Length: 335
Image (cartoon, rainbow, N blue to C red):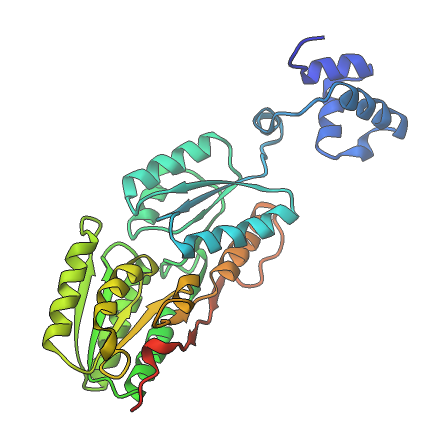
């Protein structure tokens, strides 16, 4: 027997056609007798045959593979998203191919093309602002679900959190503590609609409440030292300051700087982050965060995509999940 047994070998050994073996591998047992099914099963077991998902896809146009494209796979938010997607996908026999785009549209295009060539059944994507335009030009026609950064296209399927309302709620909470000057620390808002929502909500909420504020933007080329210097300058020249960091990957940098002013926390300096990071509860001082249900976001995205692939009813193609505030030491001000 050859080292790599093929579907033709299985058919020959079981004395059935290749088509019958293919039916067996895809669970279509109603198309054969019980005796035939047991005969094929015995041959497969004895020869430890493992079918190729790619080869099967050529005949049946389905691989049970999902392409997942995330802006930055290294951050905690992305980890929880993937866990949520995987939890739902695993229940229905799907596997994930995960790519990290670095928020670069050209890299997104490469991944979409390559994943399509591998035969994925659909995509789950955290898109940059130019992704949809690029995707349409590829001519690829497979189900796609967006998460986190969404568009206003009514035909899109997407899952997101209530960014605008969550930022407003967070700022109203900080205002209730008596802080007077506010600082937003964010990644480049031009890249993701999520950042734009948080950025715009920050400015509008504070303008409506007649509070002074400023914005520190960290683009992909900025290192932690630049952000740290800007924060240090703000804290050296202002009092009663609340700093709101709306990207989890920036929070550790800001925290290291703010911690130098520990005696002023929380009565003169408040610090709030976005996303639940385990270390924020064990740091000293512990850090108040806006917690978004990233796992649930991923789980819902997985459900939407698999339902679309399998032509199941989709009651709600657009899902908004609510965030909540986890209050810790960094904002427990005696106002």
